[in-house]
Image 1 (cartoon, rainbow, N blue to C red):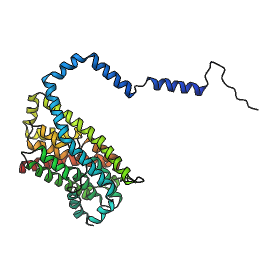
Image 2: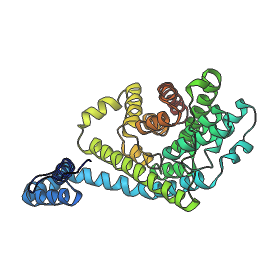
Image 3: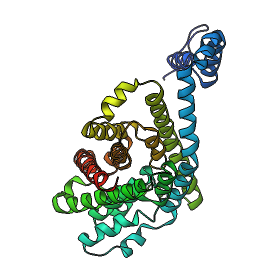
Image 4: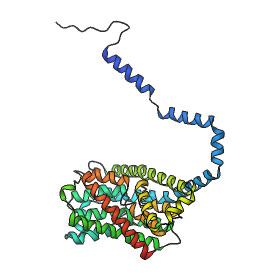
Length: 342
């Protein structure tokens, strides 16, 4: 007969020891209230240096640009998130299957033009494009929609018009260049794309959820992501405006080719939501209109968060080929469109 012995008084069994160690480890971790308390205490201890830093002219200039960019972009960001969530949740993918032509060559420009009437940010366009592929839409058309929807939708074009009140040609240039890139990439994929590289998602992100729950879940997701990227973009714009030496900006902005490439790469790195990028571009006044156009065209189509979304939705092999090709084409088309329209 097997008997169970309990540990003598004052000793711990194996499970009790593990629980105590887990509790001790958890107690050593910084919690949010503790972290906030440490930050406040640090601010109180160093309040004089902090006050002097905030009163410095460069800090005042930085804060002015940062607040201006955020306040101008925030209404368009919220509106874009609400509309994109409604499109993603309440418009069935089968609608696009019925609306698009059967021939892929004709479906590409129709899907690209659909981005002009169906608002959506980058975060929403990737899962919607994946749902289109899963429901039978030709991949070339779905990819054209993926690129055009966040770049030429009404919210983005309206925000661009507000950000560039004295340059309405910037709205037209952005629309033309973005639509050309979206259609060209769709046709390029139809011609050269390999079906084994495109791995569409197995199911929709909203399957099994009610309409209201899916809608607000999408809104929360997009607000957190897009809002965070807006703040990052505003910080970068304010830093460029207030901290970076003017001669550096003039050196980059003075070269027609280098200025376009610098802002194109900056758009990739900043990963700003398309509903807010026009206000950041408008603040980059040392650069030429063509360079800022490249920033507006490249950003909604190729950036770090989009690459991650595309790799997770369609596969890394697809993203490693699709993103560089889109970047090169977007830069070239932006330069040509800027030379003609700006």
